[in-house]
Image (cartoon, rainbow, N blue to C red; front, side):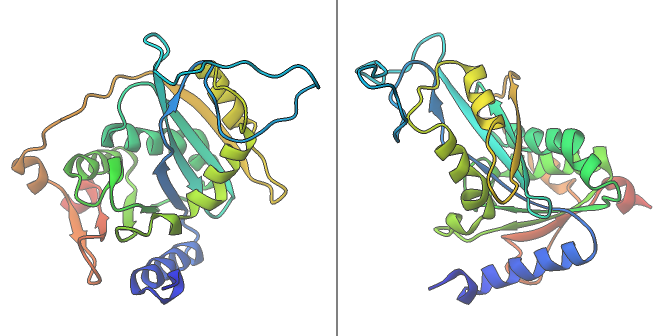
Length: 249
């Protein structure tokens, strides 16, 4: 079954077009796979002078000091630009929403000065999963801070490749650093930030050294306090979060 023949994909596409017609931004978000930092093999090939191969570690055990990094991406569909926060701790919902927050502050406000609403497309699982309570709590906090109405749409399980960030941004980042060991955290940031395409893609990137704790519990009272409304079509995957200030007035 193709994406266009799947009802959920058609529904999300219609909502994206509605947002764009109204002059409001649409972002596609996801976590790129965790990457080992150090002199490790990186898939792909790169041109090297003859007789000067790059020597790498023969094992892939994580370096105790360098560890791994977690790139979380935000792709702005309308402007073909992207933001990536490179986290150094856990891939949590708090980290995911903070990446969106950083995009809004550093890129979104400048490119969308009339932003009143924000449409977010995401996978159904992971740190931004449809069933992750902390994801919704953090989105409510973000909505309250920015006074933005958030329209969230999750692709059904098993269809993550339909999310635009996968084939419009992440694939180009992977191609840009192919065959090169990710020797340091800043090397990851620089390689991601140097990603461009003939279609005009531009990506900005920064290190996020904040500590994000795993296993944060969300109480029923916190969930009950959310101003969240499920859409008529698959409300478990499609919902709107409204700033509390607007709801109270």
